[in-house]
Length: 282
Image (cartoon, rainbow, N blue to C red; front, side, top):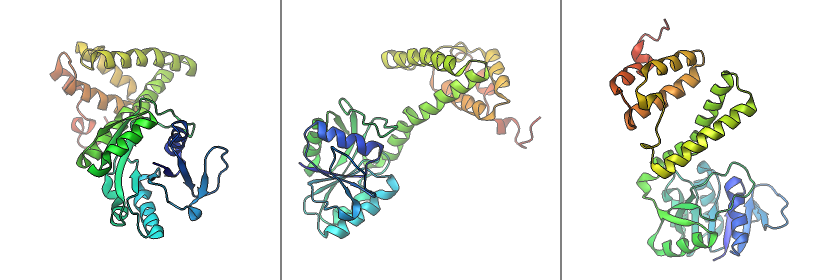
């Protein structure tokens, strides 16, 4: 099956290079403004033919339906072509206009982070797939050829799945950034904070993968050390965003992970508005 890629952002760049590496025929890489590439068949949107068997839309979620409508309007009929989007949050209903024009439709979302346009290898990457029965086998084979492995996702679960993925990657980066910021406030240099974070966070991550969250949980919450946690909250009071991050993660820990003195910790971590309903700081 030959492939046309629409969009050459961070994910589209990785997909295009993975197709080349896997010897998957790459018909067109469609962009809005001309770019030079010695290895990719780049064409501008207005000159695109959209005649590959697979039309893979690598555009922002809000553009998927519009691009699908443009393709359907230009082609008239999409007889048996497969139109794919890679949104982790939207289901295949975003491609209804392409389906009405005669296309098979699917959603294939990589479980990977693509922070830049430097291509990320897809070997071993998981893909969440929602596809019609008639094309599922072919698309599983396509993902396998790219080096990945597909798993099914139900359309009604897509948004919650994507929220989980956001917690696992971009918001994990946010939490680690908050930890580094707190370390800098404590007097560590940028280099020291990064080294400190790497040692602690990598050991924690490896423990969670090897032993599970419950068996990787330590520190004052696991001990039920309310006095130390109170000191943390006092120290963070001058930094309200960091304090909010700490409190939110702490409340989840008390709810979901093995802690001692749970009722004492729950009382200590009540949301600020419950402690002071008027909103006036004392």
